[in-house]
Amino acid sequence: MVRFAEAYDNETIVSTLSRQLSWSHFLDLIYIDEPLKRDFYTEICRLERWSVRTLRAKLDGMLYERTALSKKSEELAKKELAALRDEDRMTPDLVFRDHYLLDFLGLTDTYSERDLENSIIREMERFITELGTDFSFVARQKRITVDHEDFYIDLIFYHRRLRCLIAIDLKLGAFRAADMGQIELYLRWLDKYDRQPGEEPPLGLILCSGRSTERIELLRLEERGIRVAEYLTELPPREVLEQKLKSAVAIARERLAAREKRK
Image (cartoon, rainbow, N blue to C red; front, top):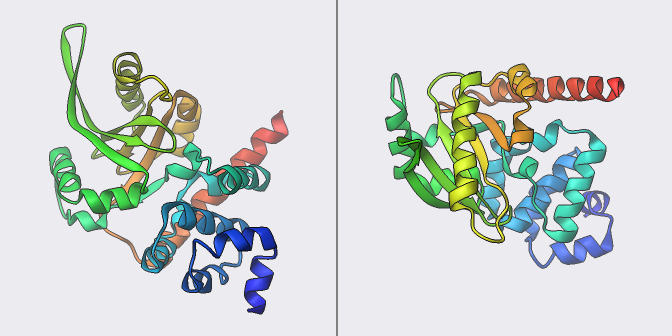
């Protein structure tokens, strides 16, 4: 109880959370030492109505460290979490991850992009759980025509809270600069022909086997509504995953600090 009082010292917030989370939830949350990390799990758990089992799985999978939010400055991260807590307002940095754990697809050795896509369709429920509960499946291999040439968008989802379509492009290899042009074409087409009144502009997610942080920054993909994430079809030991994610967070924060100094 002392630990709980130290972790949640705002009576108004506690009053709200106690109607949505059980004591079993809090027993896992109060032992998260980093306040921002604890606030993230608390709010997402509340918003997506996670069970205790799901909360523990997300903690074990290091969800927070895989989000773009963890790489932001403390001040910006606090603002986004405050907006989430007070207004239930989601942002792309809270929705998208830098790494997605797709070990449940059962893919080993060599496989094709179609094998990857088929496995996702077969395990759609678990795939959406990894993406986030506000994702709704819309289409697979959607055909679009530009200048009498057909193109096919691998997967399209709709995000309820972001109120926009999300196009997912699956890549077997590491991210390449050429991948940007392809998904940008998809997004511009969806924006012109498929976007409904009241919706936000569509966003793109390139899921690949490796991501280049510097290349992504130079191309300013986030400004174009494009995110790049690495998928893991085999879950590494927790120590390896933890080191990988902590290293990525540290590098991102160093680059953010360097950019702030140049301003």
